[in-house]
Length: 404
Ligand SMILES: Cc1ncc(COP(=O)(O)O)c(C=O)c1O
Ligand code: FES
Image (cartoon, rainbow, N blue to C red; front, side, top):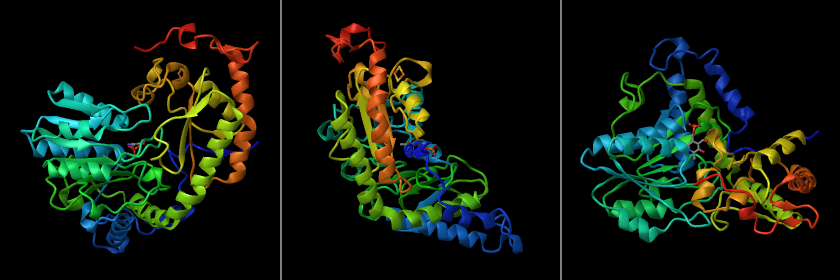
């Protein structure tokens, strides 16, 4: 049976060169980077090197703009909480309806504390309306937080342009770039982005390491106070091995950037085109003109995402259902709902996300099994007329929708 991993937006395999780079910091060089004995020899220097490797990948102007954190979620929380603490008179936050829960659950909570949250809607293709965005910017807004790329659909938002608009209005701009860093080129020094979040495990580094990029001169309040680590901007003894691993992963991401945007994209495109050609009643969600090269999110109408995943898993293929009815509710994902995807399609959405470890022959394996999986499940579906092999008349009415 094949063993095909197409869930790289959930997490990635740690590159073996990353593991090799990390090992000495568990064994010989396990000392605290702040110590001055032989066990700490070279440790502070290794962290400094990692900082400049991250700096290079994202095109930051100074290595001092890189703050190591414990994960993407911590970076997101730090950015937003810092902005509101630093500007206590500003009581509004602008974000989007399709952010990761790391942002959405945080702002939901701030709303309960009295903040006004503007969650910008998206159109059917997952795009934002920049005119409406411009009208929201004011001196009441503490921060704008807009993801660079969406984890479910791969849709890329125009964050460089949006950061310029925020800057012109005197508003701080943060982007959750967890899905974008390492997949598409960026040059932060040429932008007005003030803060940016990275998560190591999305780019072949380990889980539990992240970065907050903080533009020099940006007002800032630490989330964690304590020791002097990270120049007092994030206290806590450095996760040395993971920091070194993330640095190495960034170096490798630069090396593989072109491969990611040409060969990995070609695998994604072949899968997508093969599926759409072979299977009726399926479509690709998101903004097809502005997408990560590694991601496709396909809605298979009239069937259930989780059932597709189970059959894929049986065939040795790992993907994910971005739209899986989360947290035990029967509601498809907030991203599908924000795009107004009908529930007969939103429930059958599957995300295939690639990495440089995938191959064209794996794509062909998926193309071999997918049509029969879909046909099998449609035979069981209340929305499908098996005799005529077509959707039932008026499928939206055939079964009551479960979400408001
Ligand atoms: C867009 C986005 N933001 C934030 C996160 C959270 O990152 P971490 O798992 O490192 O906390 C993820 C991970 O799924 C993500 O996809
Ligand atoms: S994906 Fe399971 S019911 Fe919607």
